[in-house]
Length: 215
Ligand code: MG
Ligand code: ZN
Image 1 (cartoon, rainbow, N blue to C red):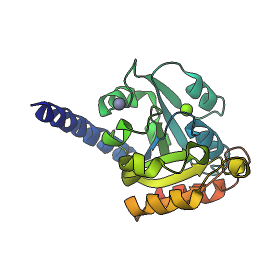
Image 2 (image 1 turned 30 degrees about the horizontal axis):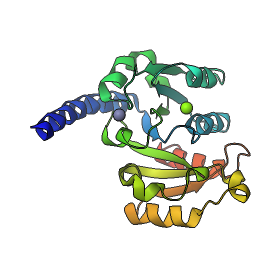
Image 3 (image 1 turned 90 degrees about the vertical axis):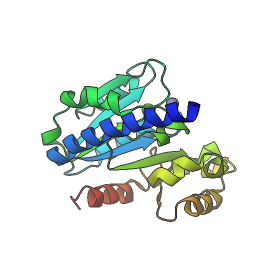
């Protein structure tokens, strides 16, 4: 019985996600659903991306359980942003996104990032209307994460390994993270970046431009 209920919720979610997707497509916007655990650096990656986006028109939807700190950080950089507070829910769903679509100037954007709630589990289960999912993992989180949270890695088109500047100070086995991520998802594109120093960001931006058809 419980299985049936869950699958019905996901079906309803997928229906609304498809409607969102049609709206994004009509506006010619490429949409990335950005996921990670708390503190991996999703907002920092967006700040770097916006600072170096050269020619890409970016908009952001911020998802957090509470607060608007991340939206304020993005707003300071002068790009359109809307904050969703889930009020306790640990992931974004398609209905939450549907409700804020009118608050972004979609026709004037090339890429919309949807920064999901910091959580390595259920954000990967919910479509919200994105073209693709991407995830951030900081190398300080430990090399066991791909095998412990396989769905995130399986669902993501790109894996951004952040905080590479900290490699000398932590026992981070980046090779194992890469190997396990690729074993779960042979197509995954892996970027090693430091949002602190900016290392690796140009490669990430080049990939975004290619995906958004602006390369
Ligand atoms: Mg954030
Ligand atoms: Zn959740």
